[in-house]
Length: 327
Ligand SMILES: [Mn+2]
Image 1 (tube, rainbow, N blue to C red):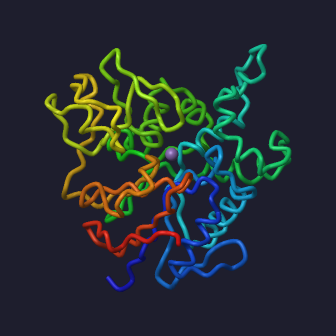
Image 2: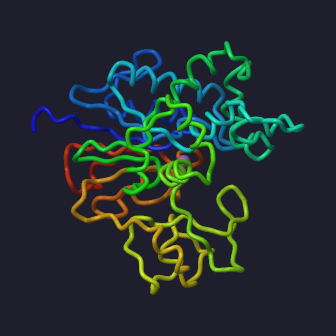
């Protein structure tokens, strides 16, 4: 096992290049003037959502610096990077709908450019002048690079995905890529089999609340469903409050809807460790996995939390002492 690569796994950066630089330094990476060279035997593994700072947490230039660093590392073979839901959204936001005929120009893109979607993406747009110019760096370099990012990664003894490890949906997407224009267009629809699969992997399992209950999410949006602990084996006896992730006082001991039960993908305790980001765990969450082989590494670096890395050295059980934070 001496030649095993150690993976330093890093979740949602959201343009916080300041936190990324500090984290890489604390892990012994050398700053080569824009990107980071790992210590011998190490590679970085980024779990997606490099872009789109949270409103109020902008770092001007941070998205561009983060993209440049991660791409340079991937190009050298020093890193792997997965697609996050923000990269997915951005790709469609910047692709004209071939069937777009609306009198509202904001609707003639594969992702609607309404005020809510634009606000979510504004911190990225701010870093790129002329982002609608087909000759711009944004279109020439970054859209093609993001389109080529993998949707999930199975290294045999290590697994990674942006939000949810879902074997059936992974099988549906295996071997597919956005090079295939038909597949790319199919994925832009939420109600196609391909779009549904990508949505689950990159945005997570969303369980309907029993009517008439609603909750307010971390962006202030009213929602009729909640993000769930998809890795749990769930029965009708489980109340919603035990299944919400991260934990939320808003979710009470309501019964979980029957139709939601198949959404859960109980993660086998014998399976290799799986790492994901996406869920905005509270900033003060303990540096520990959800289960011995299931870990969400998103500790809200996009807001007030630390950027967290997990230094994986081949272990089948995730060890709290292998967590590292930016300092
Ligand atoms: Mn995400």
